[in-house]
Each structure stands twice: as structure tokens, then as C-alpha cells.
Image (cartoon, rainbow, N blue to C red; front, side, top):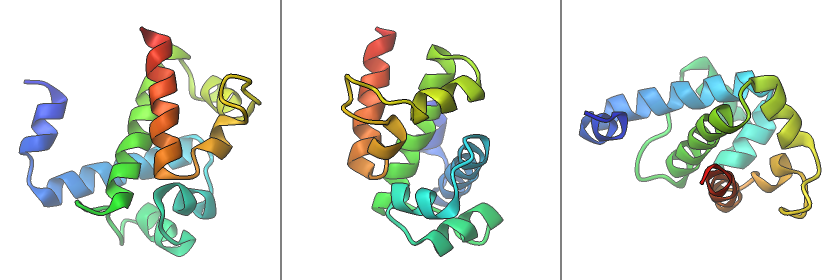
Length: 125
């Protein structure tokens, strides 16, 4: 069974826990601070700090849950495409002419994360 199918079959509480932990891990690996993480997820920076501490979880159907899914998928796609976290961070911080800016700046919203994910997925095809 595919991992995506397992996530769909998991209880809402399990989905919330797994995604929240994954988002916190991505933020730590990419050195994303609480304010930026909050902006990316559409939540307050203090809530992002709570997410990292494990005292707040992303939950369906909140937009922050979807944004978290995009962030984790972007991390996974960049891991496959680029390889290591340091190179992924360099890509995120570097001006990209195709995107019209730095990817990290473009990913400050759910829509921006979705567009970044689409861009990266197209590079794998």
C-alpha cells in the first residue's frame, strides 16, 4: 500500500500528528524561523513555535494543513531533485529567473508553496 493511501486511511488525529511533526522537521532542517514558518502556513509565528514544541497541530480542513502538505511535498521533491538539505537551502535562497524571485520568498503563502511545488515537480518530468 502506498504511503499516501495510508495517510488517507489514518485517523484525523494521526494525520494531524504526522504532518505537524514533518512540518516541524522541515522547518528545522531548512532553518526556517517561527515567523517565516507562520507566514508560510498562514498562522501566527507564536503558533508556529507551538507547532515546533508539539503543543499545536495542523488539522484538516484548515488552510494551514494544506500549506503544511505543500511544504512537506516540496521538501520531498527537492530531496529527490537536488539531493541534500544544504543544496536545497541554497536553491531556496538563490534568485530564480524562471520564478521571478527567490523561491523561499515565493513560498510565503499556501498559493506560493503550491506553485513552487508544481515548478519543482515539472523539473522531475
